[in-house]
Length: 129
Image (cartoon, rainbow, N blue to C red; front, side, top):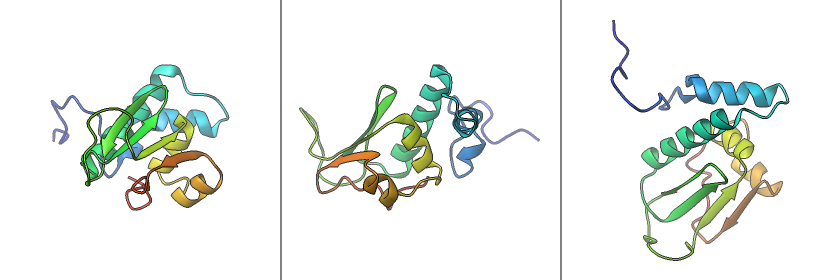
């Protein structure tokens, strides 16, 4: 029996996204106290950002995970030019932990691991993926 994603160019990141090889590799490295290889980190961050954009479509909030990626998501007023009014920014390790449920939104904000600006910059209802 062929897998459901046969022929797809996208990694498997839907509900069992934790099984995605690249996400698992990045999480394993972090669990072992290592920094994931740059390509692994990049691909894991981008896969989970894409999953967020797919599950919460819109252009109201920009989620940034420098240096690997950014997406616009969440319904509401659309942003088209200049600095977006609603921005969420964090490092790659924090993003992986939030997206996979290893870290709560409230804890990340309280600890200063996530920088938010704008009244719509709250992903608590959309994480974990």
